[in-house]
Image 1 (cartoon, rainbow, N blue to C red):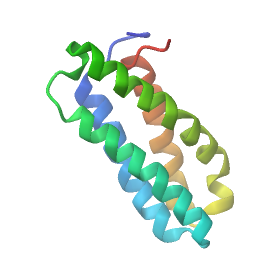
Image 2 (tube, rainbow, N blue to C red; image 1 turned 30 degrees about the horizontal axis):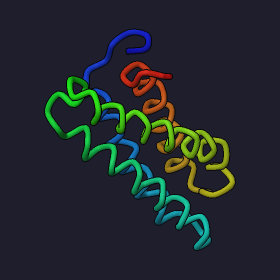
Image 3 (tube, rainbow, N blue to C red; image 1 turned 135 degrees about the vertical axis):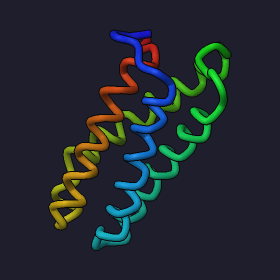
Image 4 (tube, rainbow, N blue to C red; image 1 turned 90 degrees about the horizontal axis):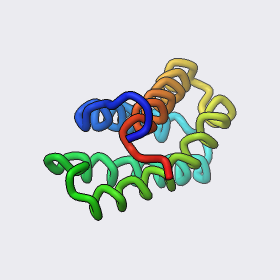
Length: 116
């Protein structure tokens, strides 16, 4: 694992926090395109949360590899959303939650998933 190890539960909790921030962002977004974009990312985050609910996924090599690849796929979307969120969401509290949640996920997950 890359960097300092973090628990599977810590990664799960970070993704869950982001999931709820994205839910709020969805309702605050003003265009259907932005809502669709946020919803798509939220769906990907939910899939990762579901996989992290499995006991000790890191010990199951193939499943963990697939989950790591899923994270790398959503990682780019999260980085782009983080850069654009202030243009999409005008409610500063929601924007701050999305930025904080995204930062926490990217930081925590980088310590849990191998970066190949």
